[in-house]
Every structure is written in structure tokens, then in C-alpha cells.
Length: 417
Image (cartoon, rainbow, N blue to C red; front, side):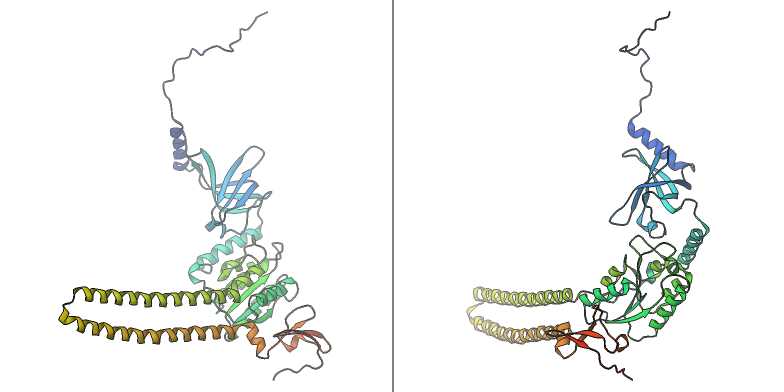
């Protein structure tokens, strides 16, 4: 029997190391090696998405893993806006990009510039090809996008007459500013014929004079339900539309080609209504703050002129020879009278402007509109009825007036013209 001797606790007798590297040297060399060659560039990597999260500025961070290992990935906001697929936990994806090594923590990361489902089909590849072609034509360029009007009055709405979207938009806009005029262009938003229906609705709104802005909206749905909003014909119709368009299609994570072509993209239909229609009460508050700033500046200027005048008079009293003192005092008195007259003119003028501004604001108030004899007609379900075409004889309605509501029954219907 051979007995082996334990080496536990023994001190190594090997020679002293001839070359010692610092940690920073190692990771720096690794990073240089990764960046200098082509081995870690232009990579397509397949894996399962886990730990996906978005930053406030739109960057997306996630990890790709398989049964052997995992790799951290980043999709920066500019690229994320150009890619139809949003990484979500559990998705099997193909990620394209290049590897970087961060020397601070020795961490490798894939910088992603393209993302598609693993085993992506022909439809997805056609969509990506269409997006690249339309991008090259400039249809999605930031330079061609128009800002939303700050104070719209006539708003076109393109959405389905069926479902909650149209109702939600009406309620939100009525709550934010009841004076708004809505022009509804109903359209089919999914299925066969949806693209043609959406384009026809847009073309009809394009003929309306004094239209300020259009909301294009539909609720969330599966990818195939949103297919009409990825159609080239609809994208081109949006690009040539003569007024600003705000899109609110699907959920926040759904980004269609129509969203990219619109002047402003909202994450949901409700958010689109809030973006397009300013809150009237907030506008009143801004006007009040502006008036207070103007009044404060006027008072500051008047007080500054008074101080300068008083300083000048004291200097004359101290320095002027006796024989010239009377002349200087006379000039001061004249200047004071001129200043007093200027102040007397300025203050009423500023006050008159402020009163005029307050009257204009009051005239624009929804309550003032109702106070002049106008009324708002609502159906039994609370929907605002802006047209005789939406009423039926015998229907019960509610009439909102300046000081309350009243119930009524429609007896006759007469259309203008």
C-alpha cells in the first residue's frame, strides 16, 4: 500500500513571479483587443430577454441568456425609436450589435442597434425594410415635424365609432376645455379595408377650413390588429396632411410607422387628447401670473425713477453754488412734474390693459358662454351631442346651462339648411 503525503498547509516553493500585472492593465488590454478586431463586431446573438427595464430618457437595458450563460445589453433611445420590437422579459430575440468592455467594472455589454424576434418571419422583415426605405426618404425626419398649436379651437378626430376611444377622447377634451369644437371622422381601424377607411377620413378632414390639428387614435391590440397603421399608403397620407397630426395608437410600448410619421406621438389615445388640448384653468393661471409680473415691473420702474430723482436733488443741494441752486431746483421740479404726469398716464393705461385682458379671459370662460344663453346637450349616457344628426325623436336628453342641468325629451328635429 502506498500512502500519499498531504500537501495541505505547505508553503509553495516555486520561484517569485517574474511579471505582475495590475487589474487596470488587464482590463484595458482586454478592451483594446475586443475593439481592435472584427471578432466582436457585427454580431447576431440569439437568446431570451430577462431583466428588461427602461430609463427615463428612453434607453432600454436587458440581459440575453441561454442555458450556458448570459450577456448584458443596452438599446439606446435613438435606436429604440427606430426599432419596432420592444424587448420584454421572456421574449426570444435576435440582437445585432457589437461588444464593449467597460474597464471600470470589467463588464462586457452588447450595444444593440437592431432587434427582431428569433426566427422572424417574412412580414417582420418586410416591415423593417419598409421602415428603412421611408426613413431614407425623410418621412420620419424630425425637421419636417410641426408643433401642436398652443390654443386650438377645431380638432379633427380619426378613430373608430365603436369602442371606448372616441368616448374617452370626448370626455377628456370636455373636461379640459368645453369650448373646443370636435369634428369626428369615423374610420375602420383594423381588418380588411381599414387603410382605405383611415385615408378617406384624413382626406375628408384636409378639406375643412380652419382645422387646427388632428388626433389619429385607436386602442391597444395584437400586432396584426395594428397592421393598418404600418401601411405605406397611410404613412404617406399622414406625411402630406396639411395640419399637425398627433397619433395615439395602441399602448405605450406599441410604436407603428404611423406614429413615426405623425408630428407628435402620444403613448395612448387619452394622452393624445391631453397633449392637444391645453387645460383652460391652467391658461387662466398663466395669464394671472403674467399680469402680476407686468404690474410688478411697472412698480419697480416707477420706484427706481423716484430714487434717481431724489438722489439727483440731494446732489444738487450739496454741490451747486448758491446762485445756480434756484435754477437747478426749478429743473428738478419740472422733471418731477413731467414724471408725475407720466406716472399718472402709465398707471391707468396699465390698469385698463389688465382689465381688458381679464374681460377677454372671462369672455372665453365656458361659464360665460353658457351665461350668454348657450347650452350643452348630453345624451342619457353622458355623451355630448353636438349635432342634430346624433339625436332621435323621443330621446331623453340632459341640458347643461349656466346654473344647473335640466332633463328634456326631444319632440322634433330640424336641421339647418
